[in-house]
Length: 523
Image (cartoon, rainbow, N blue to C red):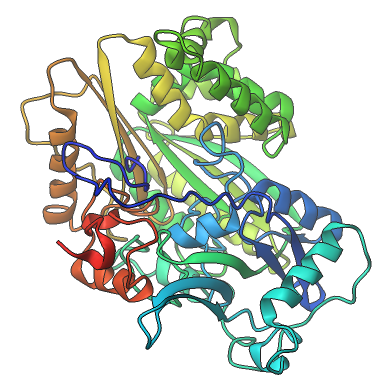
């Protein structure tokens, strides 16, 4: 989506090749543990979201983890996405009631110069955990990093430890999720719900790698008493947008658990190129550890020293797509073919009658617009609900498979956020017409993903920057929304200055957001 966040030369970015490069793998720092009676969880930098979700369910069956159970970046793109990743990019639009990943409680590292001109590592400890605060240690008698390491190692090795609790310090009382998000997203004004260049929060939030996150604290959430899942098809986008405003975002108290949108091109591409990937989700489950093993096997094949080996798996998935069954039940597929705009919605009951209130609005809305404009299907089993999840979240993988399978196609991807009172399709102005224009979104927060495919001869990078210009100038949106700037997009001046303050020597992720790749940002 963003061309990667690591230093590499391209047609638009020239990297200073004289600087040594160090790649740090944090995946073995993968433990996590509950605090405050399970109301919060501490995640080390490599703690995977799928593992976290499974463990929270084991420890506290009535609680959920802080972030998306399955996000569009986790399946076949990054099935081991971590809490630290999510905080660094502010991602996680599927869980409308929770909001994107955010915390003002973290431990992270900066590299800066001391008064003697020496480069030093500085640990910033804002975890707010009793016994792991900096002031809990006297000089020469341990430190917070060592204590955190000992605690998480004991938990990982199976030793019993008294559950840690938050301290009474400002850090211990700070936010461990965006507490204002549900009110913010229901205010239908010209603001956007969230975006990568947002400078709010402590430095770890949307840092995009300019600090090294070691650990973060996140709130957990009560599980719904029960859930109901719906596939809803709309004749036109105007009706779908009215549904979003009048039914889903009418007030913060009875928001859906999730609402995910896709257009007709998304529906068609997923059906013609995503059945194999969806079958894996349906067979193994959304958080199965075997998904990572399958991805590792796919990456191994793609790394073989043979011509076009990097395309073999997607070619196989495309050409043999039809041997897999349709992902959605027959009646949902029929409405998918009959109409051009679709929403997968999950509604939960949290004990205050919120489900009834929302479903009453849904029935009134359907009665007002009639079956010629809206068709509603409710899932009758857990397998049907899983099919909805699989269908929506194989979209990015299906897009790549479709592009590889159609040999004359080349594709680009982008993520952006539109104003909360908007949502119309940005009108492209160039003469190049996309072969396919996938649009799928976190419908509640108006964060949109586009996958555009063009024939040969089209400069797709120019097309991508044109889309960015249209989104920002004509639709008053912001780009990127949750995948980071990488080396594709220039960040606003205020965001660049924030990153420079975090990383004054430019040693972490040099070159992101249009910044210099040189030491201390020298031009």
